[in-house]
Length: 351
Ligand SMILES: NC(=O)c1ccc[n+]([C@@H]2O[C@H](COP(=O)([O-])OP(=O)(O)OC[C@H]3O[C@@H](n4cnc5c(N)ncnc54)[C@H](O)[C@@H]3O)[C@@H](O)[C@H]2O)c1
Image (cartoon, rainbow, N blue to C red; front, side, top):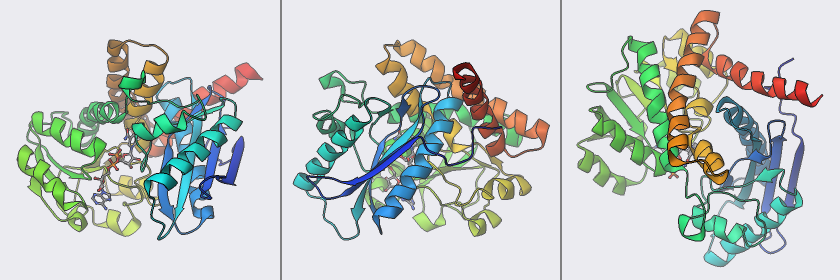
């Protein structure tokens, strides 16, 4: 029986931070492949239960991601749920990060945290005051730095196999891409695509990001146009859940490949994309560059070893897309099967 896709977690704890009073969840989904690794999201949620639900979903996705990336790391995630309307000033932020550190420490190393949406590598320095089970610290304090460059390089490696599957040719030059979200990863990726000769259309909800569009010679569109602008490829690089059933119904692209976690609003979106002949490169395969960077460098790997593993994301993507085609499944199912293979094999060894 497959280890995926149930949401049975090994350990979940939600507690009010003793300093901050904010609800913090640490969700350890699986440590079958090794100590779990996944970042801490600090985000606004309607209720603490919404934050907890996000942690459960994101930690299960980390199990898939770390396994498909060939890492000896399980899946986990932390969420600091900021109530609507709360102003997260410097003191409250620091208090919440120290509370997170205490909670991570209670797991004794079975879960390692890192930055994620809403947190930064500087925040991880605060977390380290309370626990050593934190990765992605800034280089100036002896850490391996933030993971966005690795993530962008990994997504870039996945672009060629995705194009091959959609067009029979992996060349980026002259292909049109809509990049939605010009943050830490999307901004870097847009630059890489521009350097490779892509015809770029970009957007972000933050208007000041338009300066990057001008610098790259990219066409700027309004954020709500991202899913209705005709192009060869859509690159979701903002938040998740953007590919709803109605968005997919009229999506005017031939392929989707990007860093955003959980871009599909519903699992059925993978089937809907396949039915429309749109090649979907699964998020947790293509955006694993960040965890590859964090895990391998923290374990003492050289820069060239890390680079080779990042390029390997291209091979994994090719394998997943070929397997889906040959077995008549969606790429999402093929990627889940790939991730489950390693976990099931490790379970057998431990049994
Ligand atoms: N940072 C990493 O290494 C990493 C690794 C794996 C996955 N991811 C995922 O990739 C995505 C981007 O991560 P990031 O680190 O670049 O985050 P970020 O916060 O630096 O950037 C996200 C950008 O998207 C923009 N944005 C938000 N909603 C938008 C919308 N509706 N339309 C257009 N733009 C929108 C934001 O303004 C921001 O500029 C997230 O889903 C994240 O979970 C990131």
